[in-house]
Length: 87
Ligand SMILES: [Ca+2]
Ligand SMILES: [Ca+2]
Image 1 (tube, rainbow, N blue to C red):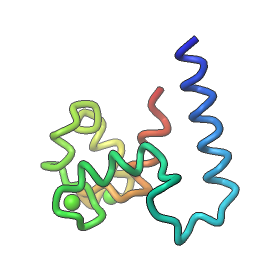
Image 2: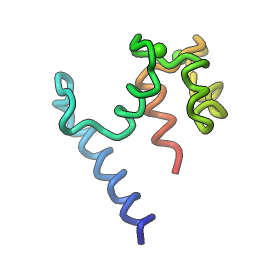
Image 3: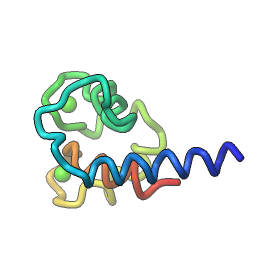
C-alpha cells in the first residue's frame, strides 16, 4: 500500500513538472529530489561532484551512468533523471 502511494505521488509529481510554469518557482512546492539535490550540493555550484555524490551511496554507485554528458558532474537535470529512473 505504501509502495502504491509512493508510486502515485511520483506520478503526480511528474505530471506537475510537465505542466510547466515552474521556471521561477522556489521552495514551497519543491520536488523532493530537488531538495535532496541541494542537500548534496555542498558547495552550491548547482552541480554534484563525485565527492559530493559520495554522501549518497546509491547516487555514488550510479554516478557514471547518471552523468550522461560525462563531464564528471551531475547537473540538476541529470540528477533528476536518475532519481526518477530509480524506484
Ligand atoms: Ca557542488
Ligand atoms: Ca554531467
